Length: 211
Length: 237
Picture 1 (cartoon, chains in turn brown, orange):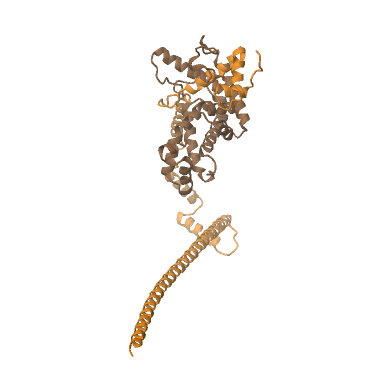
Picture 2 (tube, each protein chain N blue to C red):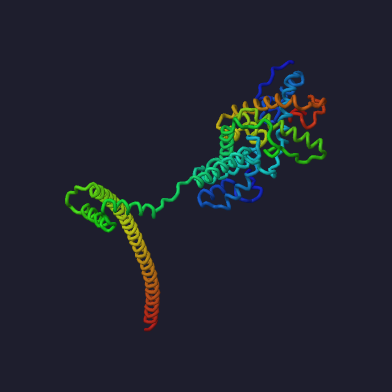
């Protein structure tokens, strides 16, 4: 998220240096402003619950501030931040493992359609998101972390491996395993389009290289 | 199917359109002839796309309240039990002692023993005095009074010792603080002195530089005058 070069503002590392050395609240606000949405996305996908994710996001930034002196400016700030958020998600999942609801209440982080053109489309969208949410929760937390970081957050494998503290090959293997599991869980639930074949008019669902 | 199945890493790189994919042409050729790998790649691709499109839940909804359906019921039952206990306590509480009756009973008892109230008071005062005195006691009441007073005195001594210790600690802490304050003040004074010395040194240096410059000018002027005089004298016959 170091878009500072484009916006002309300080980089995350520069802001964090100010937070670390000068307890600069404005610099910290800048960091939070840049990162709160990505961290919330990660937490939602990891926990499957928007409200818990909100709590974890806040705890993440609280921890970043309380542990600001331990941040090593040599490393990427984003890696450090993702790791804190992921650890908190894992802690939360461990605590609540036995309490993950099979059917969440509508108010308990249930997905809402972003642009429902018709009630049927809205219902289908909600159903699809719920299927995805539950499929993600079916996977082991380590695999889910790898998939979320790589596929949803589009991080390079090198950074995913660094965040997870594993070799890059392990990170690649976990993403492949995760995609395999998710596909196995999701494919029966979704109707596969007939034209979706190699060389056919697969449209948006074809692999990037299958053109 | 004329090629080997690509492993997961290679297939993933291919599906992601990764520029570092080992040999995309070979994988594409393989996929054209292998339905199972094609289905796998397409499945992964669809899953990736679904995940990337997956929106976030609406967070504007109210946070669900903790599941506390039984709590109001428990609270109501507890309140009921407490109220019942309070009411029963009020009903069956023991009556206040009737001091007038007691006094009358004691007076009657004293009269029966042939004593007046004043005499009894005097006897009790004597007992207290005897308990306070150094003399050995024979009366059980005096003994009990003496023991009670000894206990009270011992407790008072312990309390006062504890209080004295606390006060001493407070005093020590204040002295320590005062010493620290003195040290700080001393350091401040030394710092002030050092600053003034530095300032004086700077002033002196400036003065000396000024003096040197002035002296240099005067010397130069004197030299010029000497040269002029010498030239004039040399010009005269």
